[in-house]
Image (tube, rainbow, N blue to C red; front, side):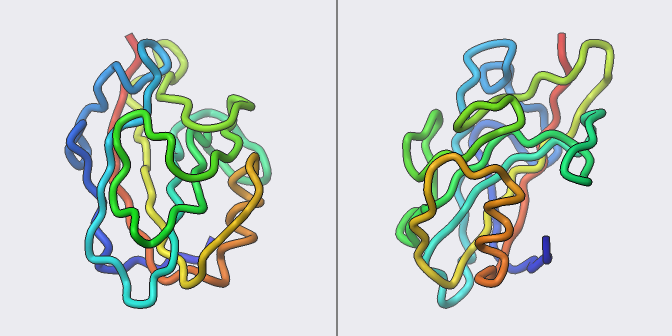
Length: 158
């Protein structure tokens, strides 16, 4: 994935940068997506995508390390926040094999994992089909990427 860091800023009422993600957003509890909001949107933005990835997961697939917890896309430019347990956008496939959000649940006794929540600003509106995995999404949107940034939260099981 080409990186296009920008002035885009991502935050959450649920956790701070490098802060602990509350258990309710984990696979051990309610497994609901956290509230997110962003500002500093690049000029020309027509849509957004949101992903969550755990690079600390001991998994190699598609030639990359980590575990994908959330793939969400087809969010119009008018959307600059997502409520907790959002129903907005189109759900992609996570590495649990499900559509939508799958919260943190690192292996037991594996220590603290870092969860990268990314918002990606695109220069076009998208109408991609439901169920894309992260590599498929990135292949489709990479030429239209205007800017992106992340919010990193942490979670330790148990």
